[in-house]
Image (tube, rainbow, N blue to C red; front, side, top):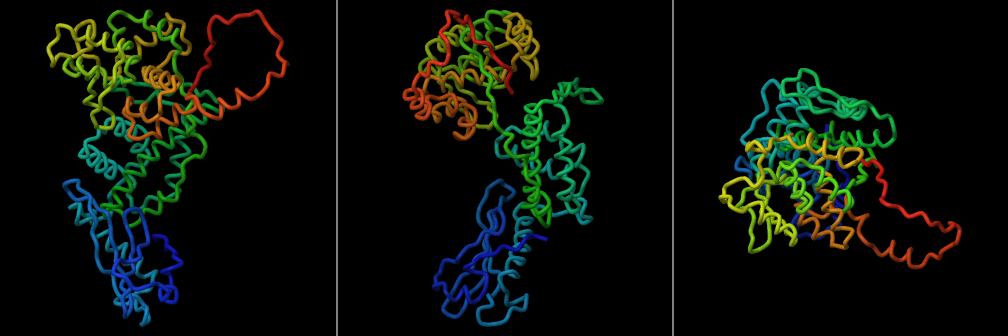
Length: 438
């Protein structure tokens, strides 16, 4: 059963009598996308409801209706005359029916609408909105459907989700496996505090996918309540990213250590901050030599963006696209074939070994190197967000804000005196020793 919302202004007839009569209802949020309204007239009030729903074409708009007469002058009977609690129940019933009608969906008659079906419907809607569902689909297939996929939403409980979340957080990270592998492989458990934090952070991200799919089903009328998953909270204080990036010297060593055929991809990543998938999808026509920009047509968010190139970057892409047709890929493997989804890690690991970069980095660290370099040079975070294709600055702040020059750090360093407690030394460091990061 859905929770009953309390409201100091609408909860009782005595409280509603203090409100002034007006045409626009007094609205109270009941659930995400659903509001209960009280419209007070000169001879009593009326309960109304409104909901923000998505139709079959993917468009979202408000739907409104009259729920019933408020019990301002008559006692509530639960049908024609409703108190605040009864109006909430009626609004939720109307919302479920309106959502089914708007989406053109009906819950199965046997009540066997499962978690897997909810995820499939959510991914289809996700793709209709122009976003790429590949990563979300892979995470759901690996972590959600094996454990929860066959459970009907009507029978899904908060206990089921909590147990699944705890098991997921305790399980070691998965390793890449062959497409036809029968059992997934896992990394050797590290056992330290940071390893536990990383696994809990990963579990939180998968929980977000699950909740998004279940909320989509609930808003579409496939579930009578969202109480089961609304009660489940993510792990706290675990999503604190420690961004690993390469120094300028490490970047040079890595580029020099790469095989000739793989080197251009690494150079492009360091110069643009683009993801591997974005780079291998580039065509020669995506480089605008006049504007000095690179057009990313296929991105994680589904939106195109323009990456600004430095003089070095413009020179690199001018040479990389010379003599190529506009539709020709900028980057290809030495054998002329296209780079595949996971072709980058093995040559990058080998290059790290030759460059003495330990532990070996992932290709995504090259993207972090670009963003971190901009932050440490004082580039404003909104500009970095635009360059990297973040939807807003929240992701940028989480990863790079601590690297940017800031008032607190500058003030402390300028005003705290030298205590004279560290003896002077003639030892000069040749290079900064890196510590492994998450």
